[in-house]
Image (cartoon, rainbow, N blue to C red; front, side):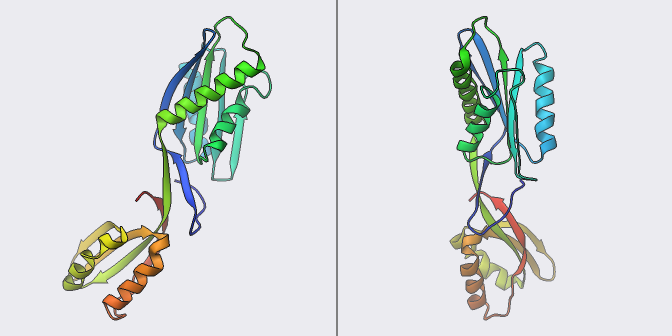
Length: 213
């Protein structure tokens, strides 16, 4: 997942890909929404949907990508401002990052007017996003500790108090333990380790990532 880190920042995106259909006066609007890591991912999705629905009158899209702070949209032949921007607004108002939405329209024979198009594209985008599932990740800090086997048992029993995740454990002459915990708990955790081991063990900071509790 790509985004900028800060100690309090949350990262909200989609769990996966979702598809749903909205109908208005026999026009069919098929929305597809998915998480993306790069702009290339967005372009790949758009190309795929256009290929799958080559016979559709319009394949409208919008996407936001944290990498490069990119936001793009296309009305794909619909009247200006009635399609791409409404889809982009749905993404923005949902607080989502790194997301692409494509809405395919099959014309039903009745003109919907500007207001009708905005409502239809908005509805299809929202439905697809709901099907994909919204998830919010928190900022986690990663640490490594070199421990004796007895010290490993001591801290293992305390990790649940910090909702810490064990990323990796390597058992050799000593135990190498990699853990991750919410960055908001970082200072409390380091202080606890210092007291528990009388300042003899110094957790090594490995980096940050976004993750779920």
